[in-house]
Length: 176
Image (cartoon, rainbow, N blue to C red; front, side, top):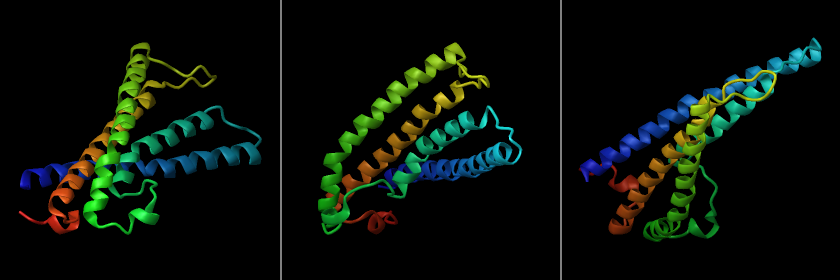
């Protein structure tokens, strides 16, 4: 059990770290959009780069924040009935339904990697006046989906242990 808990802690810490790092993109996003608003309306001098960059940063924020959101159990779910179930029943429902998430995230990793690799090989740039490189941002989809996949594996392992023991993770987390 100690090895499993160590593995789960590693996954959790990577998800936590990535979420804490990527959250600063929102601050940067607010600054560049604020700059655009002032430049456009106060000085009648709009930029050519803020719209594209803000889209890239927001997309990065969303996909890279998925594992952190899963760690904090912040993804949308239906708690009306589910919340009243015992831990073992919740774990059983989660074990059954998590396979749909595995398929979805697996396809994101697979297809995202194909698109990112193609973009890297082509050294793809946007076909706009500004023309920034796209390949660094294309890498965010498979990377973020992979982090989410690992966090889902951690959830699956926790659910299996809960299903087997009847105890919630908070009850067995500190056991040797």
